[in-house]
Image (cartoon, rainbow, N blue to C red; front, side, top):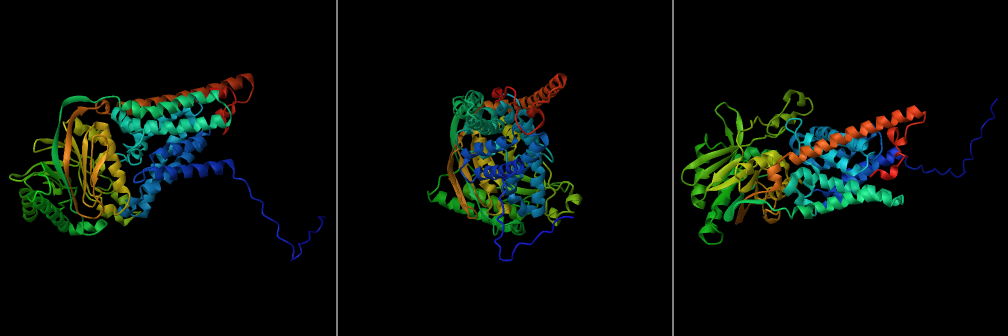
Length: 549
């Protein structure tokens, strides 16, 4: 019979609770989530590009030598912690539940990158192969599903700083690669030094130097000059919207009137000598949501503005086609001849301009019915305004490498990014998009003119420097000398070649790591010994680990 237990006296002091140390798994989870939040903090409008390698380094530290499933989980949590705040602006368009669902889905790609990183982390020079895996996953994420979502690529968080110039030789994929490589190599160096493995730190140290030197070295690679530079005057008109949010479309006539009014003021300033006479004027996306081909009043307003400013205007408009479909277009409006050419948006935005699987997504949110029924248009995205070949990427098109490259291939000597960011209020979306335009300027050696309905509008040099900008939700005009370049950078010539080369490297590295693991298990079985810890468990390999970079 068990001895009876006595309750402690009522006045006895309570037994102190012992603090339990974090389990290794929980510690890894917390670091992965913290690293994702840190990566978000490095993205515009914050100029903390130099912290991005730290974020990727923290992720590499917790993913290194773990099982594939755990690598997937840690990568997923990293991605979710990064994407939820980064894409919070989408919630204003479709509601909270679709925003969270979008981030969860996109974080699955980060999970795949984490799993791939875990696999190749057992190879020598692991940081190099893991960074290539990351680029490969970004390549997939930027294409599927529904045309992909490139937002949040590692390179898009580097609109300034040491790595930026690599975009001129390998585009955004190479910019992503060196950013991630720097972080992964840094993590491995720290780990080796903490363990006093000085010789083992040599390989990751060399990779870190390579990543840090890539930008300065890229700046030494000149673009091929196909013709002389020339300078023109371009005006960007930000007319503003009557109020924030989605409901501004209910007042689309007021939006058109705002842009006409600001253009008329520009014409008065030109006549008074306060502003230079522009060669071309650019209005933003949706500056005329009223189809001027079906509404004579709208056409008359635009024609009057063009005649007063004495320059062709690129007008962002919503057009109803003959088959009753809708196009998001930029019209070239001549001050004498009226509309003479158009460029339709080539890659329309799912869940905004159109709703894939509308009946299915309606089960989660009635907001899906706010999405439009737009169709994509053809062509390379170039309009010839007053003899100036202007490359057109409408709003989110600037996130897609191939669309910008097509415009440059078709002869664009300046890039225009007409956008309508009023839908997203005062969120960080406009700054994230502006960062992409800065990178595109460096990538293709072209000036960029970003013009939005509500800000931030900006002019950008071929070197990626913002020379002028507007505030948000205020009317404004940017008029200035713009350099037209007829050059070809290495990135423009190679297009997607660096991306696919790095993707192949990542796939081959994963295959090599898998074969290596199988060979180790086979060898262990033959000699009757257990496999090396790195082949199955969470700890690293114990055999010749000093050679693993």
